[in-house]
Amino acid sequence: MNEAEHTSNLPVLVEVMRGTIVESRHCGAIVALKPDGQIVAQLGDANLVTSTRSTIKAIQAIPFVASGAADRFSITERELAVACASHGGEPMHTETVAAMLERIGLTESHLRCGAHLPYNEDATRKLQSEGKPFTQLHNNCSGKHTGMLATCLHNDWSIENYLANEHPLQQKIISVFRQLGDLPEELPTAIDGCSAPTFGVSLRSLALAFARLARFTTAHLTNHETDSHSQFQPTTFDSSTIKAIQRIVKTMITHPEMVGGTGRLDTNLMQTARGSLFCKIGAEATYVIGVLPCDKFPEGLGIALKIQDGATRALATVVIETLAQLGVLDEEQQAELASYHKPVLNNYRGLRIGEIIPVFNLGL
Image (tube, rainbow, N blue to C red; front, side):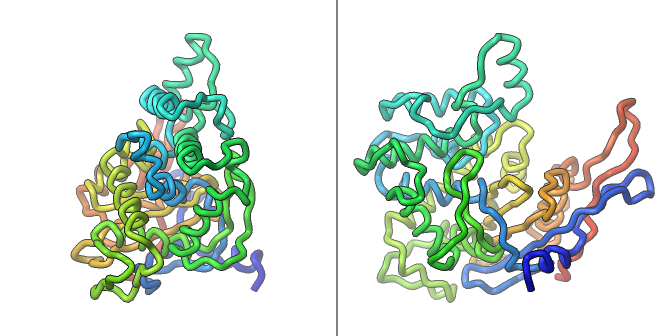
């Protein structure tokens, strides 16, 4: 089956309603699995290949911590969280990134992510009212790039071409990602919006990587230890990598405001989940979630989903409904996230004219 046939057979996940009229439908795929690869729930093609985009920022930050660079430069937890972020360009984000750059002896000009307006509308309006330009600090990936630069400095690697596929930093990132997601040696690679490498991987591999990140949060393993509760044996990771994963997940959960920002799905979902999960959005409506080990999922769970047409308006609805059906979010938490779960549509007079609703069943 070719890629066109794969995508044409994807199920409808969301309907956009105008009154009782279905105006639009969005198709996609969802997979949830354990760290050993056992699928817990699936809808659509688990082998659907998509670009990773920003979903893997937590993985891209692992060498930053595992190498000792984060400790060498006295990186705080808030700073580490912004290194895993697609932030909104609010002052709390830009000031944090600027402080990191100053501490490592570099400036905004050393970043190679490019400049764009802040995602946060208030931050954009403030810049415009003050007549100030937007800079690379406002790029949602500026924290990630600062972490990459710090890692290069710590390892005496070139900072001029730190985004090149063949650079030792990028090779280290893909090596860790390959082990987490059971990825093949040869991966489709392209250029992300921030100019870093992005990879073509299956939803299954994305979910698997995040299931294993989640599993590590309660694991105290070395190369010579085993985990009797799971078939997944992380013997390929040394203790510094495992500790780095644990620190990264903890800081994302502790400082979700730095991972997204005001009114952002990542931030609000982690705040509402109250320590039970970590999550990351990616461009073109891709999303990943790591559910920490709990009574229902004692080994943890990884979830990856994709809205095939890239429609962001359908993404949050699918994310919240998936977590609800899996029993990760209770009714009270779903109510807190109602504006994401089933968004109400209003016209220009403020009249309610419809809503966006999930229409899928994971069959659990």
